[in-house]
Length: 457
Image (cartoon, rainbow, N blue to C red; front, side):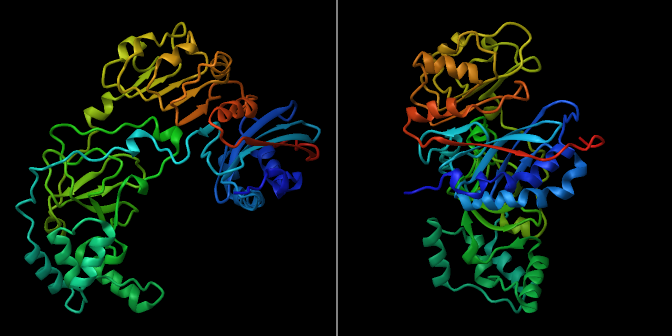
């Protein structure tokens, strides 16, 4: 498939960037009107990430708009950039991006097409002994909804059968009972349709989906950038009512709570849960769900559970943070169930990875620049699928031909390095080449913004 290069698009035109660069120079954090200074960020086709003062928020959209349009025209998902400003006006802009939309954030490299982190591949454990809650009462539910909405039209048996075939699972009795008496037909473009939707919401106390919009909340409905997702873990404790997963083929979404969180019937409950219990899938979280009610009948009558949500111990134990504020050493962090090892700012000498060698489930290593005594020890961690390191550590691995070939994704981490340090595209391209992946495209642009405002930077 042919791809467009950045230098064939408006992104190659310094003038496209001028409004954004002037905004960054005027309001950017750490600016200095008397010396050269640097800024960086990321721009996508419809969003951006910039380090600006709060006072600049009202101007961001107008300044970023031309670059967003250029990103879309270039056929890439987004680009990262760094710029050096000089007080007299000249500016040097470096724009980096992939020829294909594979990188969700600066320094992030997808090495295997279509790969997702292990938590996004995890399926629910079987629950053969789970049964519906004693409060589940399809007949009472149907009768109550019909009393509250006497004019409502329900779905036919054929429509329910079509929905089951589309979803790949049979609908539980309570959900079938609901849709047989009231299937919301969404016509938001008409006053009658909006009134119907509001009546339905008042009757059932949630924002319902029409049967045709019900869907399975599997892991694909909760996408996350690799460099965030690889640091996550999933796990279910023995006393859990809800399995601590990213998603499940047994989570049938049938509505929302009004705040963007999805309501689902859970057919794959935890060890102490009920088949058909109602869970809330938060839109700001990647993992887990909250138990709302033991049954759809309970939810209809407002008999919701009030339980304090806690992170599963199984999930917490799978992730270790070695730094001055958490676990003090690699030795103290390792155990057979460890999946994610994150090494941050240390109080002392760089550490050895020898204690982590042989861990059966270790899949992610994230080590800040300068924290490893011998980066080549990474070659002994044979189960890694994600690796995040500083530029120097990557250089050592590449020179020693010690980059683990089982990786699915990688990241070059410049956090904590001088502000002038950007993601080295040449280094990233060396890593990508090991997997025959398309290279990062680099564009160097120069222009003059005119003298800086001495009062505002």
